[in-house]
Length: 349
Image 1 (tube, rainbow, N blue to C red):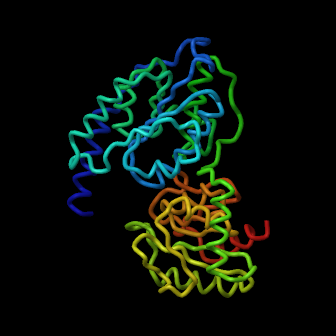
Image 2 (cartoon, helix red, strand yellow):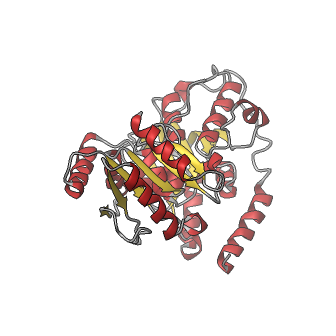
Image 3 (tube, rainbow, N blue to C red):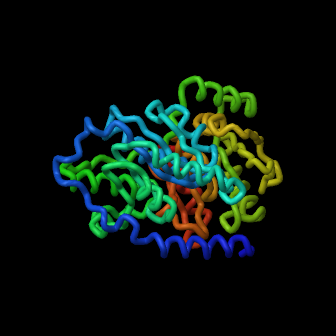
């Protein structure tokens, strides 16, 4: 671990220790005091700049829209990636953007915090129970109703998938509303979704067709990831060769990362884009997307494409792609035959 990472780790532990009790004394409102028609302005707090974490916020945004159909939503985030992610969400009114590097833009960072205080909301939701700044921002915000994101034992007992970073905030909001007198919601948690429109999907199909120039269906792989989540060239070469052997009637293409590198030495037809929505639209036109745990894996899931995610250091219970027949594999406990069988099942179904 680098010195910078060590400092950040220490800082996070200190902040979590300091803020762990923030909001713990806040109680759910009395039954009947929170009415659907009164919730017109909602703030969702998720001060993180990573693509994956913004995509993982989309189920909560959908849940809020489904519950309060006449509301407008502000997002308090970090960095600019939320703009393309939520581009087609008509209910998003403002995206309040913290600078990606706070200490390099300290005055702007502070101004955003104090600017938040001047806004009035009906409901504020902290989307990450482990975010110290999220808890503080929820406390600092000006609203009557606040969901801080505590870990509740009854949620853990009722929902075996409560650990998932997209699902827990939804379960937590539902619990809060149920305690407030709302009828209990039992529907499935919404999937990740960037709401690609027909024009975007058609453009993605055009780009893919220009790459493959045939009518066969396509398997898409993404061989990069950050840090220890990244598998070796030898690992990807073995998996790619097996795909070629098992699926001769499919195209196998590679989406390249922003670094423009390939763990299979560019052997497959490949494409490169910096446009998040264009990337999602291309993936939408493939039959299955395969990657290690990373933001682009979540982008594939949010394009509503069947996705296989490989996990070796991160917890699939927290970050697994779900819905659309997607599957996650802990590669420390499974083997290539398991993965190929899953690919075959997903392609058939």
